[in-house]
Image (cartoon, rainbow, N blue to C red; front, top):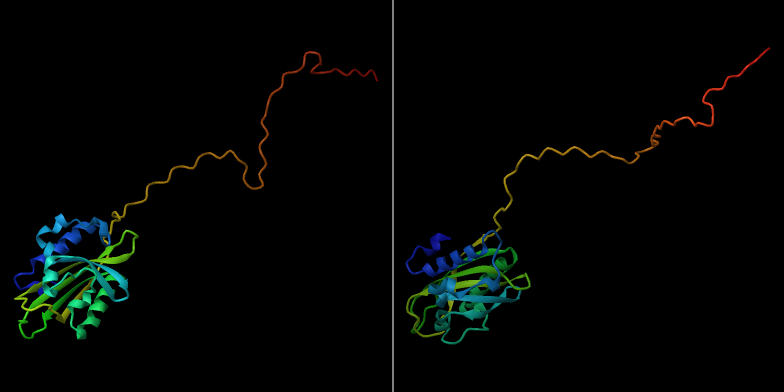
Length: 220
């Protein structure tokens, strides 16, 4: 995705993605509750959090001031596709579903719609999946950076390119090691199969009142 950030001015995109990567560590993704604004303080005005409300649809829960400036109004509660021109909304919806379902990281390259008092603008939109407190993938940490004069709001954007990258948790399994030698099996005292228990031999001393040997006399 680095080719999307070749131009100067998109460092906030890289900062937010690096923060997300640091939070997730060895997991697929971090949780929404782990996001701390202090970790992305220099990119906060471009950052937002989405909540999935239907397939291909997500509304803005939290948004930085840059997004409100682009729309000329408070954007909380609005769908993300409010920033996109009608021809590109299906592509953004598909990108959202990839982020939620695969899950994946998505970055879109945008171009501002040009009109009266609406000069040309270039923009980048980054979408990173998050788990909700319930454990489902229904949140997104995003970053939206538009370059150029805003002019007359609201500003909407065409989609001119998209990159989607599947994510997976890094392996946490240790390197394979030889199996340890098995310990000798303990002596078994039970009786297996059809074998009968051995009878213990005990020596008995002769009784003093009973002769051990008896002499039998025969005069015949």
